[in-house]
Amino acid sequence: MTKILFICHGNICRSPMAEFVMKDMAKKRNADVDVESAATTDEEIGNDIHYGTRRKLREMGVPFSKRRARQMTRADYDKFDYLIGMDKYNVADMIRIAGGDPKEKIHFLLDFTGQRGVDVDDPWYTGDFDAAYFDIERGCRALLDRILSGRG
Image: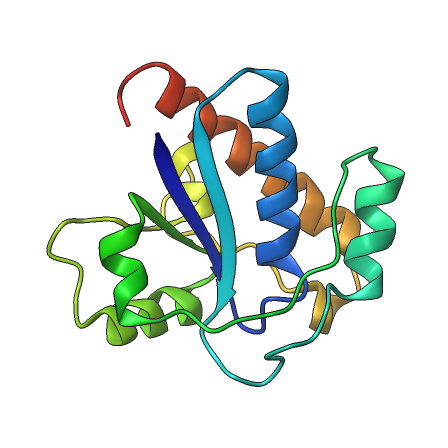
C-alpha cells in the first residue's frame, strides 16, 4: 500500500480537495493507497473543509466526508511514502517540520505533471476553486499513474 499525505497551509481548501479527489480516483482504479491531508500551520486546526471546496467537490461528483484540519508532524515523514505540498511555502515548511528530506519524499503536486516546482494557487486568497480543482485533478491523476505504473 502506498501512503500519501497532501499538505497545504490550513488543511481546509487544497489539501482536503486533493485527499478526496485522490481517494475517488484510487477507488475507481482499484489502487491500493491510503490518503490523508494536513496543514503546515495550526491556524485552522479542528475546522472542517472550506465551503468553496465542498461546493467544488459536489459539483464534480467527488464524494467527501466531514473532517477536522490537522497539522503535519515530524512522525508523518516516516509514516507516509509521499508528502505532497501545494506551493513553495508549504514545501519549505514541510522540510522544516520533517527536519529535512533525506528520503526525497517531499514533492510539489504539479511535479508529477512535469511542471516541476509550480504552485497550486490557494483559493482561500484567489477565490478560484475551479482553477485549484483543475490543477489538483491533473496532479492527482499523474501521481496515481506513477504509482500504478510501478515507478512510485
